[in-house]
Length: 515
Image (cartoon, rainbow, N blue to C red; front, side, top):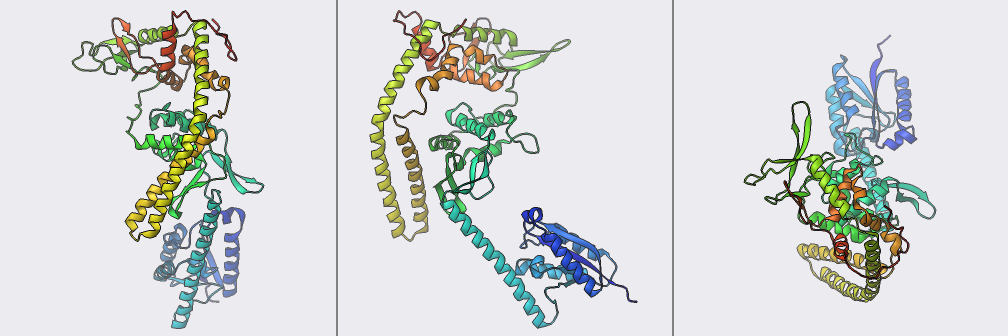
């Protein structure tokens, strides 16, 4: 009885979805085994490529198959495939893999086609490979056209960006919806960077890394490079950009996390003067590092742990050569204690707090009236921009120069961005999202007692106090302490009101201060 000829089976599906929701690989293997049994072949190994495109030649399991049949000591091993499209979905890929299998000592067979070496058989084989390639390309085109059409209708069609998830919604199908609590974390990060609360992308990175609910990569921490991509995404402002398909600022049907104006502020900051990256030593040990300047030279004060006889001791010190206080240190607890007392002194009296609140409310009402008047000016500017867009579009139609067309298209895009920003402003003019008390409740709580936030365990809170209370670095003299600090406008106002004999007003909507 003749020895059965050895055979191996090769199966492939191009999508992992076919593996999870279907049995494509299993069906291919069953059909190939039936063919082997009918032909009297002994299957000694099965190779499966999962989620690998047919246009790719360097596939893991295919390469293993070729190495396998090279090693076994037989004159020839039959390689069984279910269909010619399982080997490749492109003519060049088919020919190269066919040659590699032949050179390794394999003979290609299939229950769907007879592979021969005569000219007619080769012609049929090549034609079928070309048809398979055409099917792949046609499917890709159809998928692209359907995805592009859905995007033009305002729907995101790719993998959801972080902060969103797909949800089947009546009348929309799969629609992006905020994925909480991640969406709120991203919203805070984006608005914080736009407003300057986070002075650099590194601070945004630190904020996200300190948020337990924010998903981290396998490394355990978010990288600054990832933040750069996240900050510039139009999708968070409710618009879809797909440059490779010529789609820019397509209004989306999904709920935005931030306004378009905030997105523009972010882009302006990203394209403006670069900020120095956050230092690794700006941590909980020395929260004032970088915010205190030396009274002798005006340079920022540094900090370090100094080794003593039996322990390490924290100090702030000036490290500027030529300064009279060069390398002369101040104990951490002394300097931070004096700073804490300084914050306590900034706490306004109840009478001053009431007075400041009344002044801010008058300012709020005045801004509301001015905003209503500004809407007319913005509408005029919108009309002027629309006229400019029409002029550029006319020029694009009239010119044959690709350089000029590209230049005009860039100008149109900038004008369209400005239109969106102004349209948002018109909608907001004179119509605040919340009342005065709701809007400023947190702000007045902070204004009444900034020291309370300073006592927080979070470094981010401490740094927020420094940015919100002081207009510039605080000068510190080693033997004298802090000099007069440059305060931000709200605290500067309350300081100026001290000693004023103005008539006091009642506080409405805000709880009075407690001792």
